[in-house]
Image (cartoon, rainbow, N blue to C red; front, side, top):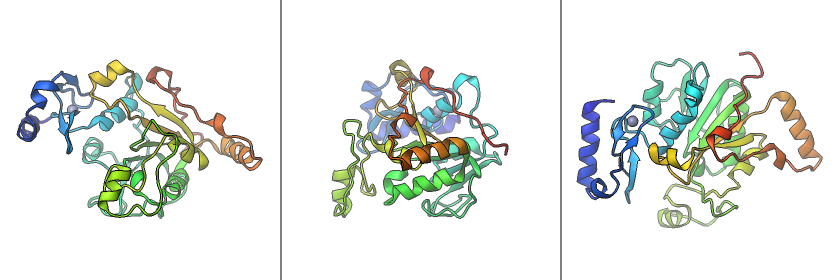
Length: 279
Ligand SMILES: [Zn+2]
């Protein structure tokens, strides 16, 4: 945590909307940099108490860190990671890690300048792929999910987050929503092509993932300044044996609903399987 960065972010917040210093100033704790104090706004209109002024992290970065550091360890240590559309805060945290690679079509400074839907990298080469707030921008999100599945080793995991409307089951997407204004109105942002519903998990299951959710309880959501309507989707690529059984069940028309689980609280989240195949 840099002192200069801290004061710069606090001053910027004061200039943009000083009401947050009166109404949203409950002290929060950042699990990434250790800062304890008021968090500042993000975005327009402002979402208060969202950004840690110490390190610049937003809610989902802190939740990702809390997932990785459960039980006092580091679940990302020693893992080969491919991060799509990487956020600066995560790139900073991972600096110097030779197992961390990044990918994007436009973003400067990434390891691989590639299209998410057509990644020219070998099958089963990563332990972890990450994509936060990316899939809602991609017209063929199913193809991006298949690419993630292909790139992962058996037992590997995709860490994903997308905006989800938890009050609807079905994702809202359709042809004919064109132009910035219509996409804002329908999908919440000018460059989103859909608004996911709770069937987001079903889309991942359809390409073979086993899907879990990671979130914390209400007290921790307040303590760490997390969103109450967003979680990290943990999509596990089953072992070759489990995948074969899954495909056989699906081709026989059996329901695959038993493969997925929704876990509401962190202490109940079962351990993510380790590598099934030695690297
Ligand atoms: Zn911080």
